[in-house]
Image (cartoon, rainbow, N blue to C red):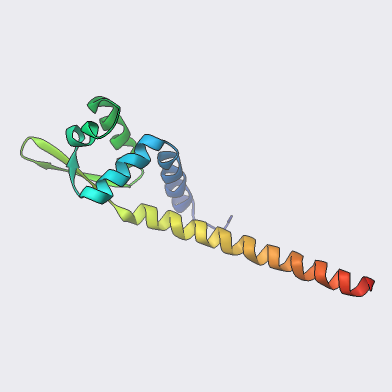
Amino acid sequence: MTDEPRGDAEAVDSVLVALADPTRRQLLDLLAAHGEATATTLAERLPVSRQAVVKHLVVLDAAGLVSSSRVGREVRYAVRPAALNATARWMAALASDWDRRLANIKRIAEAAERDSR
């Protein structure tokens, strides 16, 4: 999809990079299931340290997938679905384009088969 604005392409790229790591996907799943959570709470549910969780959350935040807010001494994280939704729309448009191309190939192949009879 070459007609995509550069900023949108970079946003999709950062989301795909963030989602490439299984630990980050687990973090998103946990946040989606439980709402807000601290890095400490998240680390208790994963086989990685709190510091590793924080590093993963920084990547997710940079991609626009989570947000953080300070509540007293705690930093709480929550899912931000907008970037994920934009990436899903891009993927759906890409899939639609491929479906259209495959339908054209099928139509051409069926026409060639009919003509050869």
